[in-house]
Image (spheres, rainbow, N blue to C red):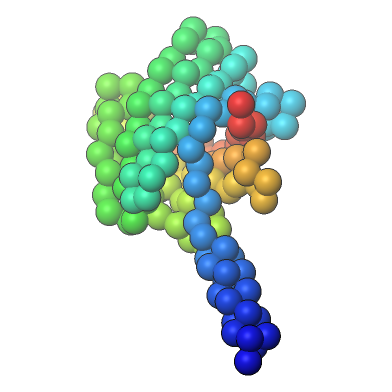
Length: 154
């Protein structure tokens, strides 16, 4: 009886671990060698500080590149409820939710008076929790591109 009970506990613990959602909290630095930006200019550096406590996720990004230093602060509801943020002076409404082991963020943003861009980001965390990969698809304004940002935990 004890062996059967112990076996049941082990199965429940393993099942709970398998259902656990990734947590992206931490300070993350872009791995430039692994990141791919396609048609877009590659930033020289990117650091993200993430505070993730479901259903809220705060993402503070500092990026340096041809446009100088650009900072952004985004706040998401990871439960599929709409989030509103301001990105480069434009309001952006997004839907953020887990789809399996990936966190998917979808939003539309204005890139000009008559131009909107549709963006889908898929965030995944490596099994060891040391690497976050963000695969992004952007479409609109005559552009259709994909890129990948690989971040390593500091």
